[in-house]
Length: 445
Image (cartoon, rainbow, N blue to C red):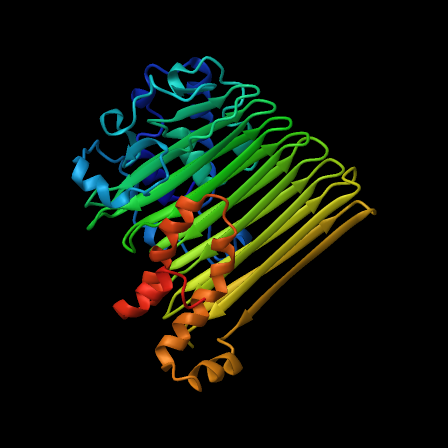
């Protein structure tokens, strides 16, 4: 394919073909980077005619100013305090503008039993790296692979039951437009159990383009609890992907939260690699002002007797826009499949917009599948009920909005994350302190 002038400018400006950022990487990684850099330069820039980007314009990136690699930055311990999750008691790994910050991270020599964490360039086994993401690589996935600066390989040993969650805190802090790559390879051996929390935040005044990829490999009979929380400020951009391989009788339970940004796109691809596996993908998105949130999900049922359950709910306000494209692909050999997909959206403004497209592609004949999508305004009858009981218009609207997504929040298995998210989400809706307190304490729901 012929590259566009924009691609050429970006490739030149971001030194994608240089190996300076990975001088200690293995030959295998360097070869992957060269191949990805070539693919990035040759792939046409997405337009409105590109199906996967039809409703997600990339105008914010077209100038090319966000493709300058982010410089290394440091933050004080006090600057990190607002990003703490009380009572989570996690092992925290800090990335600032895509660079691993060892001095702000927990001690990697004091890891839970059965867990190892290595830098990608020092990893003893690269067999899984880019295996999941490479199969479904987008244009920006190639960019991520081509320009990796810091990536971690987190491995959980066979039979290990790691109670302490691992929190990967990604902080966007640059006050000028730049590119921050984030990359995690998460590997769980058979019969293991562990929790990964991906926490994306930003400091005031930051203008960072975060390009992130997470690969999850959940071994036979293993259990993985996965949270991905996007809490960046509106001036930032984020394009990311989560690519998972779930093996025989394994379970992956994932939750996504997107509060909205100038541009926020997440591709979620879950692939079953063994019979009897199960995956749960739930999510909430809450764009407002002129923010854009886009979730593209795909469940690949390749083998028999696997279950998938996916529920995403969005509340879109002001002049914000949301995109949800959920696909379930059931291959010919995937008999006895159970697959469910639900997307519900609430518009709280006549200028808000959502484009939703649930898809079923079935090539097996012995399956149970269901999918559906709804777009609605606040229920008039429920509003009337609350108003007749002395509740004001604004308060009633907040209560109904909060209740619409609170069900998914309350289903989360980690109590500390529930306690952390409840006031964060309540703050999005409440405009009075007393109402915020009520929502935070769950008294109105």
